[in-house]
Length: 194
Figure: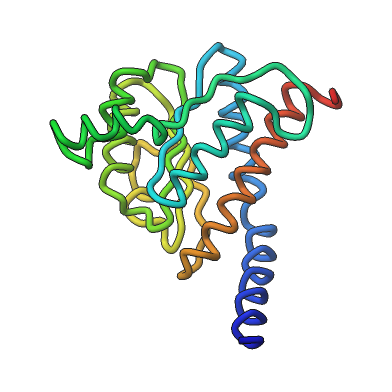
């Protein structure tokens, strides 16, 4: 058991070191996209499945309420929280459309989609990205492993990929990346306000 704990911790440390080297540029780019969207009165729509659904909700909550500073709320919606909407779409159409249908209804040109998939291959996330492109939205993808199909989609404007085989390690870095995006957005838009 001790070895298992040590190995998981060491993998996390090694992955953080790699990401610390590889991700600053793409994180800065993604944060700048979000800032531009919000300054132009747009909104961020976020989606994911399972743990990534929780991450989408967490990120939206940090923008709408606050992260580490008190500041005005920012426009963000997690497409993962309305059971009636999700189940009606899944029942009447398919689970592959649970996010794309919401984007069709709620998304506007100038908005941003934050699409989260640890595998990069979730069918409903890829469909969401396609609908976002049709709507005139820009997309930030948060992926893992080799980025999957999502990482290769031309309609993805910025891809933050965590190159690891373990879903757990990928998700640990996803939440770190989301927190960093919140910090960068807050700092850019509100400076040292507290």
